[in-house]
Length: 402
Image 1 (cartoon, helix red, strand yellow):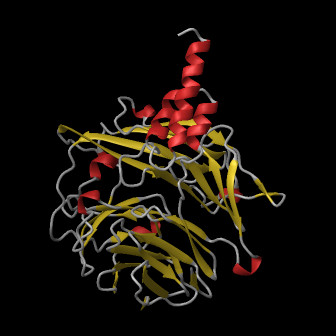
Image 2 (tube, rainbow, N blue to C red; image 1 turned 60 degrees about the horizontal axis):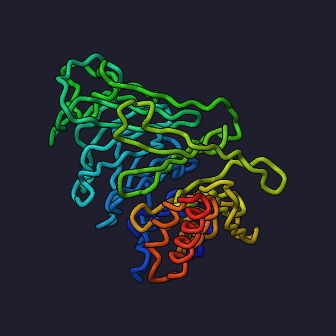
């Protein structure tokens, strides 16, 4: 889709693409708008290079982290780059704030996950100004309980951690809150009580009433280091299904964010063992969920497996070796397109009427309720489907003397 030479990192949200094409050169491309891409250069010195690109769902805000722990904020409306000098750590994950999904002027309170395992809260304005920056470390807290529940799900290489807080988070301050004595590179922050700024999410990591549930992998393998991917579907509405890539395989299950018991928030339905690709065990470069399938990106191909038993491969897309090995697999959570990139090319994948065989799969299994549900949504494009399901259901009832 976009011919490149040394692509190392890429992400897309709401049709806005950010890609690292050299150690310090970033391009911004708006998919489908016919505009030429914009170039931005980060002030990085060799051997440092871009390690992670994090892009907000609305495509307005980005945080880029380098291998040596330098971090930058990019406002995509203006393509302006701001060095976040007070944060010196490798940021491996960002939890964006849904309350600011339409706000181009500020990120709102967001959470950063670091390579050292620490969680940092901060707010960044469109001009790159940081407020309410603080590392959230375990401390005692006497927050008053409120009716509202808040949840954080943290994915690591060999475990998933669910945290639920019964308390209403305190509002973050609009100004101030800089911490000059922070040493985030070591995963530590020394702050006196009088210095510590009020943050929105500190209760998750400081309150004695916070609930915690951990799902752990039974294996540990260096081959799967840095492969602890977690994805959910749907990407915009309340999630109903998760897929987690761990050393044990790919765990797929139900998500119930309103579950009464914290252990029921994520419930595994089945596990897909890792596959041999060209005769060797190879962890996927990335995973993505659609309504009825899971997509797995490997170094030389993309596979799509059915989420219905027996989880057959229904799509396989290998590419020529000259295009290089897959480096990443990212989902645009707004358009639901999936992007795979190698050092030389970015490829865009999308679903094409993926429910067209699903009604028959349910029908063959005797699940008339689900078969009817899907067939009724396809009356305009496949009227014979509803007729066939009704006939099969009628035959079954007659046979059962019902």
